[in-house]
Length: 312
Image (cartoon, rainbow, N blue to C red; front, side):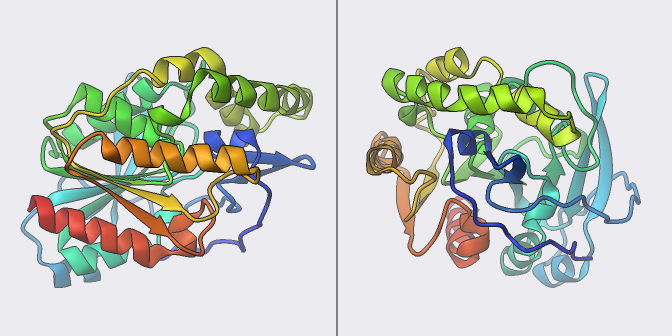
């Protein structure tokens, strides 16, 4: 069942776009897309069928699995198929419904099991108290995949903020990841001392205004994601992606930034990440904003298919 989405609102990307959300004129927009709740039926199943063929995967609706980790529940949606499993992780402020069009296409074209999920504070998943941390999100993802029986041979597809989760996950579980497709993702190379200081300065007045506004689930989640932004990202800058795990970095032609200097640093960070190991590749999504999965879904599908073929 496809989840209806509202029309995208093209808003400027301020510094908070790196948390996946832009605050403009008192509105909240997630990765350039108006967020909707996922109305898929809450039918819980207990297993997957890794031996399904691509035609089976195309015909089967994703099943909802409610996973519990550290006292909170997380919603995982599984379309059955074979390994490698493709795990789709949306940007900040977005839930599993972001992948409603891409997930069935990937299942049909690759025959792989396809998994999407709602992170804490999103969709059908519980809220979690305290600051948001990529390491905690990675632990949630690992727990969910373990309970689904997926403990190896994963192709991780991560957009925007989810790049930080992917980096934490591959640090914690390099043996589980067969490969990754990082879609205009937050990569460690970008968060230099000077750029992080600039982002903190740009974020501060927006966050101050947001704290004074009426609190909603979305604003609380954004504030959690922005907590300790400077120290968190200075530490993130020092992390290194394991050379043993292949990766494709897709960079948007527009980047998340309107200023030439920041845009060039974003592009250079993506290139530096790719240059760090021979099993990495850079793809430029021409005619695309930061919202590549919506603007250029063909680029994402082709990159994921190539990665699946590479690791299968």
